[in-house]
Image 1 (tube, rainbow, N blue to C red):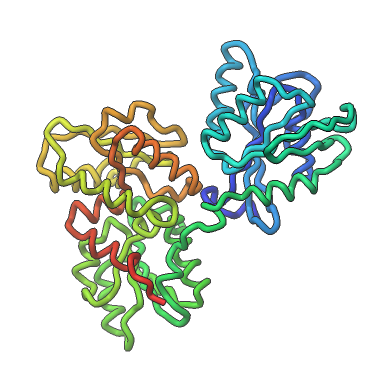
Image 2 (tube, rainbow, N blue to C red):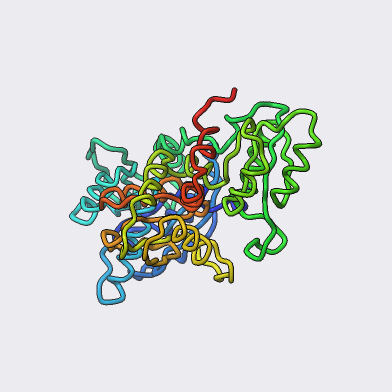
Amino acid sequence: MAETAPRGERLNIGLFGRRNVGKSSLLNALCGQSVSIVSNTAGTTTDAVAKIYELIPVGPVTFFDTAGIDDIGEVGEKRVQATRRILYKSDIAVIVSDGCFGDFEKALIKTAKDLKIPFVLVFNKADILPESDVSFDFPFIRVSAEKKTNIEELKEILKSLVPDYVKNAPPLLHDLIKKGDTVICVCPIDTSAPKGRLILPQVQAIRDILDAQAFAYTVQNAEDCKNVINNMKTPPALVVTDSQLIRQVKDAVSPSIPLTTFSTLFARYKGDLKKLCEGAEKLKNLKDGDKILIAEACSHHVQEDDIARVKIPAVVKKACGKNISFDFAAGIDFPADLEKYALVIHCGGCMLSRLETLRRLNECSARGVPVTNFGIALSAAQGILDRVVEPLMTDKK
């Protein structure tokens, strides 16, 4: 079911337009159920409404019904800002109009083009609008959310707009193994592990191993990993470890056995492995007084041995030997003042879509700030980066 798909694995489709053009009615028509409150009163939708939906054959998507882009007043301006944040993270934009093609619609289209977001212009309320022979050099369609006219045709347009970075997304790890291989996953169960379950990157990696018709062998620590390997007739095709244990696992695993980390896999899967490795080079050139931003895409209770606020700063300080400081950011908003940082160390992005992750990396690059991720930073700071990246640089099939 679409609802069970991780947030970062769902395509984001945002509905944008002026107040009272029928965005909420259109969302309800697309999903075939009442999701958003519909009213003739302008400004009924305040906070964005998210609806998870299975768009066959694309897969799970999240539709976002947003506040009107023409909202007014102090609170209205905040709603507009929230709408723009949804646009920024959308994989596809649905720009809704009630027949008018004015400054607001043109501005939305310009923003979508500037951000390279595929979009469709939807003239809603076709059942009460006069016929028109207007045409555009981009996708558009006339629909009636009220009468359910052309809703299926709109879905077909949405399917055609799925971006290449989604259709041709890099694999997680199944290209590194073949049917019948064994992969050892080192998944520590410590105070930071969620109660009763594994963290998302570990779950996704194990599922990808199973999809490759290979065998996933899961252990908790380096010693168990070593014991399992010693008892195997054939060495594992790959060992994947939590980045926090990379040094211990490296010492336990023969150099002849490919070794990587979950974060390194996600660097390729969600982001740009080359850029993140290049960013880690900054660790060698830090100076006294430099400031580093450690950014997480999700918010959680800070643990005593928190990887972002405790472990990474300790490892980085030890490696560089400089008097440096750290700022921390968590959640969906990315700091605007990136230029003051010598380096950004980002989480693996399991809760972000590939687009959101790439946008954050590109924003850092545009500001001239090197960026890397948690696992690559930990591996680089301990002199192990070349080894954990090597399996991803070689075709194992």
